[in-house]
Length: 155
Image (cartoon, rainbow, N blue to C red; front, side):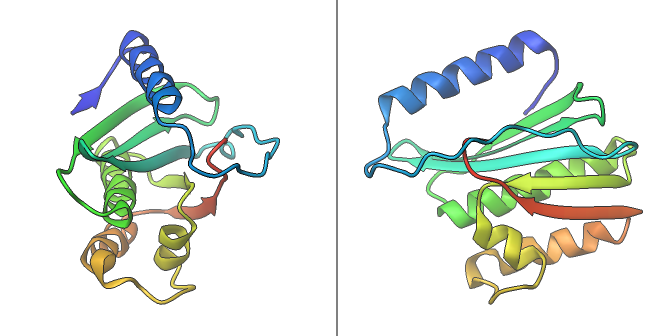
């Protein structure tokens, strides 16, 4: 489902904040001072994330312009998918949406280092996400320029 309009995004972030409050991390985590950075001029940025809980898994992405403006966002409910599958699906959905909207200069950012390193072919490809990564690599042939970056969850 693609969301358009700032009121829907605000609602999604509000729900996300409430969910984080309801399900705190099980272990104390090191604090990082992280902030979101604009993409380079002429590029768009895709931030993607996956989540799973007893209610099921969700994949989501948001596209922003080089000025930080909202372009579009999307989510997908994935039943009982493993987190790696949700994360890789969110990345694929974001790239697909960007290409369909006509963007060819893309920066992709997410908090799952395994998925980021796997798409860059810097680590062993987990079998669960191999078909999704193949889809992503096929999509990337339509890009003029693309980069991938890991960010901490707080970013």
